[in-house]
Length: 173
Image (cartoon, rainbow, N blue to C red; front, top):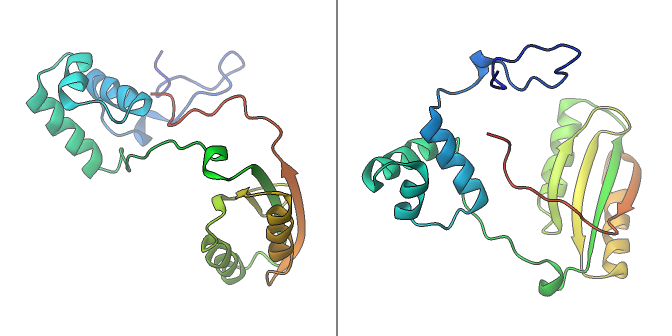
């Protein structure tokens, strides 16, 4: 049974999105999305070949997927260490209040920091999970101090990454 229609039960605890929540995609759209998640730089001719269609309808499909927001963009995966970013760390941040104005102000303030790579509002154990890169330990300490001094921040717990064993772009299709 495809994930969009799988029931929730003891044998399938993660059914995926409900069928009414998914955009209408056929098998070709799914192949296109899967291939582009793995290699966003492939040519339209190669993509069409892998999807089993000719290049003109493949390009139309890609443009439709972009226009509907299913494809949000393309990027290069760079090597942080080769670019001088030796440390990656996470911070769990607790705020003094969960009023929307406080949440918005915090997101706006830290959102302008170039070292912040991800910002997630979370449930349980804190209000936000942030992912940072730093050039060295002194830079990491500076970012932690800056975060601690940010208005409305009541608690900061940092977690330095020792090793990353898996990073997969996109989602299962």
